[in-house]
Length: 316
Image (cartoon, rainbow, N blue to C red; front, side, top):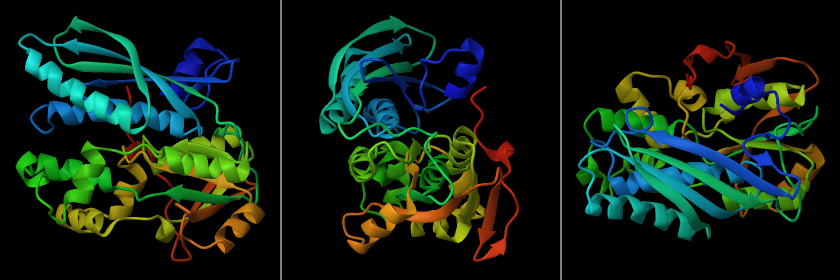
């Protein structure tokens, strides 16, 4: 959505996942709207509150920043009770405290449906700031975590797997948690910027891995070669995809809301990091940066069909 805003206003102050102000301050905002981003029959108010904060903190992580303050506006429908507010703000507060962000203000107003708008303010990391435009040919394309799990969790919820099942230690907890209770990859981003300084590129995959690949390539004016077989996909995601008769790679590329990090790092720096061992390194390689202008996909070494961006989430 930030790219659409940039084209509409024509401004240079708007950054990548965050705006970067002259005082080395990061600012981002996101809204969650009932019926668009969540359904109250599928998520508890506490979960909705957590997610509203987490997705904003993920924008700070996408630039390797440190979150500081949150401003939360809640638009509540008729009949929204004091107990409802307590549940909602418990989730908001729990996520803010876990990542040491302070709720510094906000607003409450009436609306036809529940909506939360969160603005997050953070600081540029002391080792630098990573943006989408820092990739260069020869860099290694890397990512955290796993992809497609949030889409799998949403499929489960829509198929009737409700809160009482989420409270059990079932094999499906990973995919459900990834959709309901995303975790912003702040420590992972700090590890990367401590290794690279401002050299490299980074963003989060909130709108899907495919979208992140396109944004990185376009903003850095480079090409990418991506090995689909190297994209990390959790075993539970694969099981749910099989139930849905879907290729899990499609969910990994286009599902969205995984809030993982996708970045580019100098090959020599990556090689030195790898020598230290995989323990403590939260990233895995999924491809390389090329000096072309296309995104080329392979699957186990053979050419794969190109990205189909019509499958990605469209904001409008």
